[in-house]
Length: 175
Image (cartoon, rainbow, N blue to C red; front, side):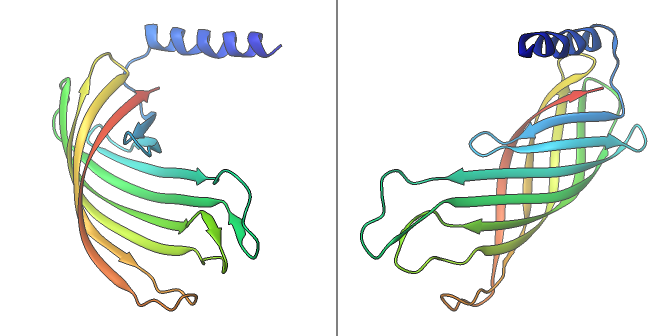
C-alpha cells in the first residue's frame, strides 16, 4: 500500500514536471545545514509572498547523571517574506523583506532546565533565482538585518540586538 501511494506521488510530480509551466504556487528549501521549508505564492508575475517554517531537534545520547535532567533541544522558526522579482527570463533577480520569529531551547544535561530563548529577525533580501526547467529553480540570496533577542527569566538576561548577514542557497519547485 505504501509503495502504491509513493508511486502515485512520484508519477504525479513527474507528470507535472513534464507539462507544467512556472506557476503561482511553489515549495522549496532555503539553506543547507538547517534548511527552512518555504511555501511561495505569486500575487503577480513580479510580486511574491513566502511562508517560512523550520525545525531543528537535538536529543543528547546517554543517561543523565544524578541530580541532572536530560533535555531535548528544539529550534522552531516561522516567518513571512515579500519579494519583488525583476524580469521574466531564466535568471530572475529580486529584492525583498522577511520577518522570522524563532524560539530555541538548548538541549543537553542540566541541573536546572533552561528556558527557551525567543528572537525576532527582520531582514532586507537581495537574491536571484535561475530556472533550470520551467518549474524548477535554484538560487542564492544575501540577507542583512536585525536580530532582536528577548529577555527570559531563568537565568535573568536582558534584551539583545544584533546586526546579522547571511548567504542562503535556495531550491524551488513551482506548480
